[in-house]
Image (cartoon, rainbow, N blue to C red; front, side, top):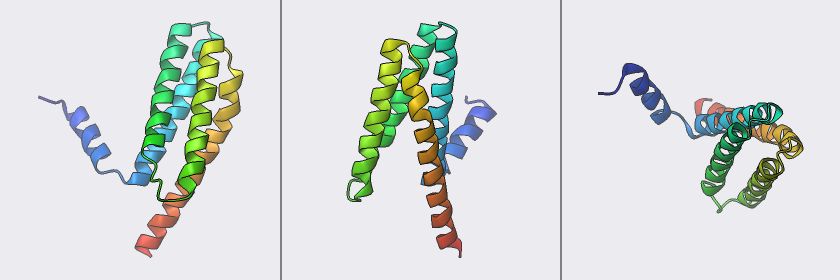
Length: 126
């Protein structure tokens, strides 16, 4: 039997809008990258590897869900590929610089998606 918190969490994910889900995924990428940087700083390479790999998996998921009927999808796919390349470089080289370079870009992209989601919601309710 599932505990009440797990049921609540599952239900909240199932009722999220697409925009909410994208925001949640970007938040988790940013969270994992920051945790990976802290782990690197502490010479915890196993921890940084785990956080960076999780961030890469989320970015790969975002890329795999792009709707390529829209022109913007090609540009986003290239960005996601670049993000994952930089995360990989940070992981291989045990260097924070590649992640520090893409973190602001990821935050900016998250904000753009958030603004677009707000516009869509305003259009649907107004």
